[in-house]
Structures are given as structure tokens and as C-alpha cells.
Amino acid sequence: MVFIRDTELVLRATVELVNTLPRTETTGSDALVSMDQLDDFATRHAYTGSRTRDDRELAAVRGIRSRIYELWTVGRDEAVPLVNAMLRDGKALPQLVRHDDFDWHIHASDPSDALAQRMLVETAMAFVDVIRADEYARVRVCDADDCSGVYVDFSKNGSKRYCDAGNCGNRMNVNAYRRRKADQPV
Image 1 (spheres, one colour):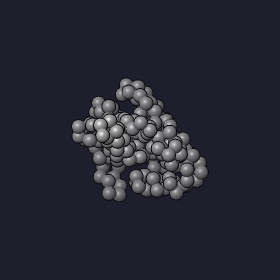
Image 2 (image 1 turned 90 degrees about the horizontal axis):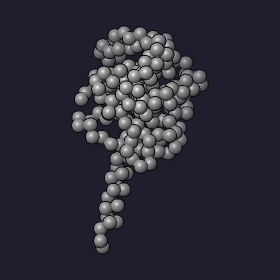
Image 3 (image 1 turned 30 degrees about the vertical axis):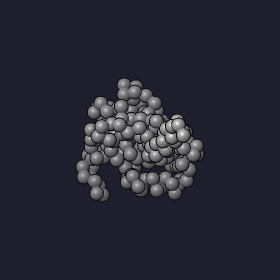
Image 4 (image 1 turned 60 degrees about the vertical axis):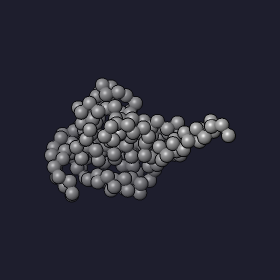
């Protein structure tokens, strides 16, 4: 299973955005509280278009995280109305664009729209691809006992069980090893 490059990039950005929520952070704290953090996120994930770089923009981006997180709490069919609402609320108008180092790809919002609106629409467009490809089973919550981080499984065989946010795979493997060692007779 391979998503087109721009879909995968948006899904990775979306996972990182959702994992800034306190409920998904292994520390239990919000990881998106400053404009510097938002600027870093927007730069690393190549968000283009207008930016106000003010408290309202930060609050708006923080505000969409819970709405996006809902996509990890439902199945494929239940995700459709959520995605459609995101597209409708974002006034999505898909168009092909080319910029920076990216070849032709789809933007579905105007570059002058608010950053949070553009992020919401891009997320919805990426989830359109996930739903249409019938790959919604790859949209998962971490299996670690102490983590509720989210991820999209991009592995070939769909076997990924842990998020990348808190080193969960290594922690769970160490815990399993320690349990096995404790169960062995001395």
C-alpha cells in the first residue's frame, strides 16, 4: 500500500499535529503552546499561504486538533461525514498547484485562507484518499499501555503497533523482556 506523496506528507503532518494534544502526549502536557512551536511545525511541514502569526492563529490551529483526532476514534464509514464536514466548513475547492520542490498536487483551499482552515482541508483531502483506497484500518491509536498517541501505518504489511511520539515500541519491548525474565525460574 502506497499513498501518493502529498497524501502521505499531509497524513504525517496531521499525526504530528494531533499528537501535540495533552491526551496523546506521554507527558500529558500540550506540545503546541507557542507561536515558535507553530512556526516550526508549519515550516517543517511546508505549509504555504498567508500567516498572521498571532494568538488567534495559534488558538485556531490548537482548536482543530480535537476535531481531527475524532478521525482516529471512528471507523471508515463513520469518518465520511466528519471528512465531508471538514471539506464543507473549509469551503474546499480542489485545484492542482505546483510550488517549491513539489510537483503537481492538490490544494483545496485558497492561500489567503486562515492556516487552521487550510490545515483542516488538507487533512480532509488526505483522509479522502485513505477512505477511497479502503485503507482506513491503517489509521490507528498506539497499542502502548500508557500512550494514546495516533499514527498512520505506512508499513508494507500493515503490522505497525506503536506511535513514533514517545518511543513506545522500544518501551513496550523492554517491558515484555522484563516480564519474560521475571517469569523465568532462577
